[in-house]
Image 1 (cartoon, one colour):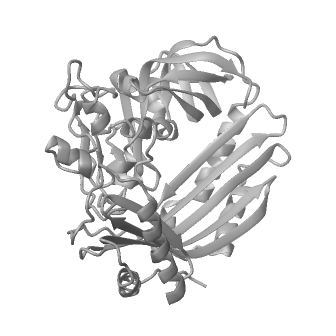
Image 2 (cartoon, one colour; image 1 turned 180 degrees about the vertical axis):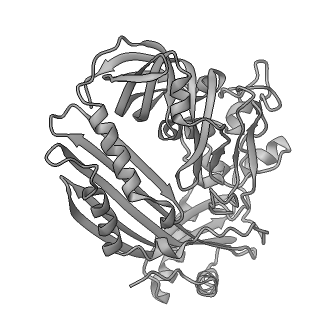
Length: 457
């Protein structure tokens, strides 16, 4: 049975039912109606499949300078009334918030077509067939590999309404598929993954072939001394670290001197060069390759934001409160750009970094000596002031010599900042959609710091 999202009229009617029950100074209703379906495969066979649908209603009540929320997924009148009452009771008990902003009145939103029927109709049978396409591929040699993977499809509706007359509604879908191949001797591992709003953009056979090829090529890795190397980062590796930089673009942190974008002596670096001139990064919910929600949890519109343009810092994320304090324009989704190292991008219009024309093969060919990295994992923050992080390489790390991949090497622990990387940029590859709301290029970076070896595959 296919999923049908909550209609605009039904969402509005539900929101109005809840708002009519509110007795506080202000009320906000957030509706999330979702479907998810997933399939796992491991040890060369499909192992599990699952699915769930759920509709939740969150009620946020404001009484004076106090605010609190309560949530339910039981939608009869009695349960909704009880949830509103609980939110109001909690609000009376909450401490006063000196930075509390009033709820929003009606807003204008960009139309974003982020819902794909193919994704919402991705049945267990279709997901199993995709998994089988990988497992039965002729690229998988018998008894040499263990292949595993995961497929997850999501579809749903987000709606926000306030007692001041705001109503926002957005249907969306996302789908991801990843696969990992491990050699039977345990020395080689390969990974490939892709995500989009539309299942038609996912190519299971191609993903499987890439993972298998990397697993076979990465067998029997040899140790190479840690140090600073030129690296060729595949789009997946770039996608693992670039959102950490956007997560640090919080205006308040910069204004208060706690950010890599704080200017010495006061102020921010907006208008200053912070990266190589080839670097342009922006967010835009309406971009055909991003298609993210055009409003945040408060109902504030999310529009196009250019973060870095030709290496120059153009924007930082201002919440409504901090924008009021600084006489600046607030940004929808700014609350999700609140820390150092957080933020996957979808909360404020996705992330897109423009690329060049080079293929990965061409980036490798232009490298005299370096390391090819498939992806990073287990990433942790080291220094918020520089966005310095640490992590490990994984699932295919290779030595490049005189423009050719010559051998598999052991994985590394690394200490590096995406901001440093964008200042040591040597060349850009083609931009690719790695997952829904995230488009990044492969890149070649000078002097990437590897600190130690790892025996993990």
